[in-house]
Length: 88
Image (cartoon, rainbow, N blue to C red):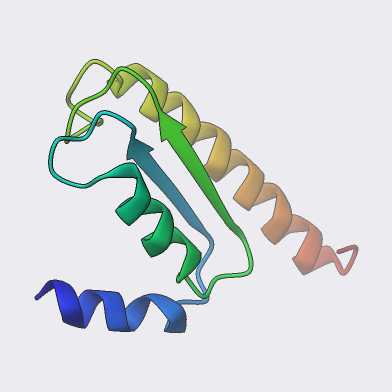
């Protein structure tokens, strides 16, 4: 359940993009921020979204979320290329 998932957050080294809606009626911004703080990845980014609901990927913010994900993946691909070339 949720407790098990929370226990795993500090162990995850994977780069993480966390999108949180300020208007989420189920998960408050504070709860989302605390979950983000516990993520163990060194490369992580919190995006607080405005004007979204509980599921931003299908609500009014879906285009904003898509843009953030594309930008995140482009940056992650660049980091991987730099690491492979030994320039990071």
